[in-house]
Image 1: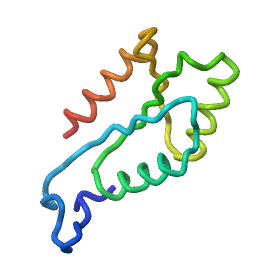
Image 2: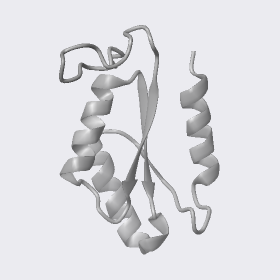
Image 3: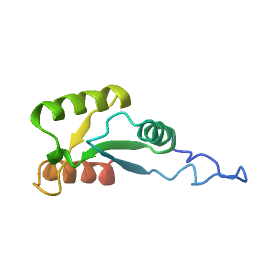
Length: 106
């Protein structure tokens, strides 16, 4: 993945090329495959050194819907998606591990 950070309106780099950055894309589990989410993911892939995706509000979906939504997300983004719920706590431990990995990568 890149690391140049892209360019702003003036054509100047948004971030120094040597700056290693990571990002976590949060998407609503109830709306898999939104064009704006896919576009944001594609932008991140070309902008940051490492990125991950978390599908929030997973508790709002029934078991069958969760499976379909996660498959749709992973198909649209071509990347694993972590299901998370702040209400039930589902996936929060895994989310913290992902955040730690993104922040401490060498």
